[in-house]
Length: 263
Ligand code: T3D
Image (cartoon, rainbow, N blue to C red; front, side, top):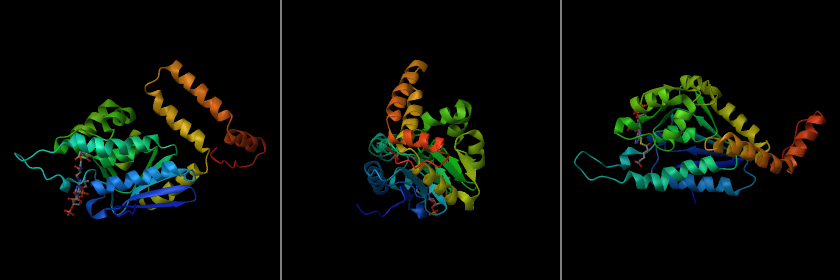
């Protein structure tokens, strides 16, 4: 598939996916959804890809759904937004969350609506100081979708989740970091160097182990302590038979940096 709405490149084990509709603040139309789906399938299928970096072109990260594709007006015909969620946003969030490689999001500007929650579906979120997060949905009579109602209370607590969702106010990146919504806020000029270095560091890591961390943390929400302890035992057993564990221990004992292969 050739891409017109995203950029996709792989370098040294890191896939970089750039949302590329800057004149529309990289908002989603069906074509961009299809391209992102295709790119994420490539990331999943290619063993040489060991981390994903997501960012946006231009001054914004992503403004969610392209509202100019929603020709609705009071008294006019309605659209089935559930069908759009089922076809596009739900698979997008699930495929990011289920990718067996670490995902880093570099939020270069405003992240609004599903764009904000797309960022929050990534494992580690870095944002430029000038960026902001906007749960814009209530402004058009909707609820936070793309996992917003799920991750927001987990990340910032119910009081702040409700405030963000009710008001649709812009949350500046520095405050997002202070509230624990994201990993880090950095100077604008530092965003891409920092995010690229982080993605490269993760790509050189013990990929199977990192995938297990991601899965274990995600499952902890639904598990009780005993079930989670059992999960940790089973994952640790599997990882203990892997090459990266042996390499990690040998490197520690040999006082040298590890050379993880992701196996
Ligand atoms: O529909 C379904 O499938 C259901 C699923 C929905 C998921 C969702 O994401 S619903 C939420 C949709 N998104 C929004 O409601 C956000 C709308 N945008 C904004 O609130 C603001 O634009 C921002 C807070 C993102 C940025 O504000 P600001 O002041 O920095 O920029 P701006 O001037 O408002 O926007 C710049 C341009 O981008 C402008 O176009 P123009 O005037 O220069 O020709 C604006 O219309 C355009 N733009 C921004 N967001 C969207 C958009 N065009 C289409 N769709 C957008 N979402």
